[in-house]
Length: 609
Image 1 (cartoon, one colour):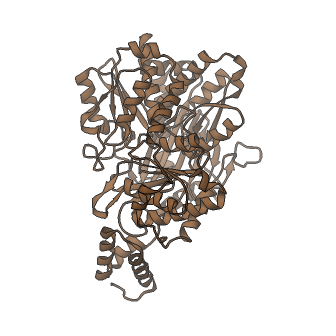
Image 2: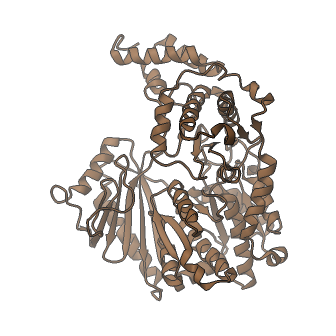
Image 3: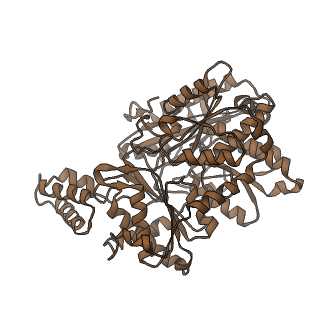
């Protein structure tokens, strides 16, 4: 070992030796044993330097050995902590139980897989007398929150890394209300994990669950009930039966194929053409660089080819755990347009409200109707709400906030029709309090089929929405920065721009008219200058409002080394000079990059297209 005997090295060695006493997975055990034998301090630091952090998104990390990775032992430790925390919070945990689902991820070199992790988690609960509803096969992530609500369970766990690179996995946690956990539960669970590191006596013996009366398989029931519930959002069955519109669907080597086929059947639509190379789950994601449809055209190459071959005009793409949806449409010019998350949010918001309005018996009911979106998403729903008379609220970034807020509103007797975030996440159906790419896909298909009877494309309807409610032009991107100190400095500079505690008054030629800083809790637009939305000192987030109607938010990512920005120019209805608006937004974004990010000075790496 390089600097033998330093206190840090000794601590790493002790952590690794402790690991060997507890780990019974032969692959990860062998990796750690070899590291100890070689005395490689650098490698030991990588595996044992810090434990994965349990946050409001649960866990997400690469699969591999040690406390910094997803593996059998860290799953056991995490679930033991979670189990103890639930016992403390629910006196009826042993009556109600939990649900556990998994995707198709697997990692040969460490022997980890989503299914294996799910079984070990189930075993942990069953060993404590807690009933477990463990899905017998892969499912889309939204099935877990659906099951929590549907069966009135105490909690849900989904083992998935969604659209992350193939070596990653994750452990996503839902509370009894069917929404992802928010503070203080993350801290409480984290604490309980620390206190329950040593595997319990039967922790490794997951074969025990197969004969346990506490093990239930909700697969058949949820497959029936979920599709029955989303049919409440089907309003044009006759049009669906008759439509000539053809759709292509890709599940990008994930779980979505079968479930989107079933959703189309539930809506009486002909099944979409599935991209053959991508329809079956494959943990190697062989045809894409990143399995994330948000990356745009690169992920959709095979879909375009199939659509051209089969004469389909619309492409629906799910991410690997089927909780997100990307949509592309062939234009008159023969080009393909991939809709941004904000554009699809505008279309779905318009569609779901229109369907509600056409089917609402009571005009006064609108005072109890709500739509939500995250603070970095387009404000188009606000514009529609203002004109139509329903309520719009924005929440912090992430569906955990929208899901929890939707549940609060529903408990007060309100109708939450729709929620979305620009990262292609849509909640179109109140039965799932999280983003759901399966229901979003089939509702988009019905909307497109209906519009086709009016000789309208999705793109034409989007323009009609903007014509009616005002153009909302958005532009978002990010810079990569691996140095937390540089990121901290960049945001400190913005908070002390012209001397201590002063924010910028302008950005290039654009005058700043308002500042909201959700890291510190400052909001210049409030009488007491205190922000209404919850604040978090652990993440950076500042929103600038400009005199020209522009808004730009800069924030750090919770899961990646990125500083993201989201910008939007909102024009009042009737201002139809889109090219002029786009030009103005481009200039604003260039000024933002140059004056606030200063990429050259801060050595930031641009997003590569």
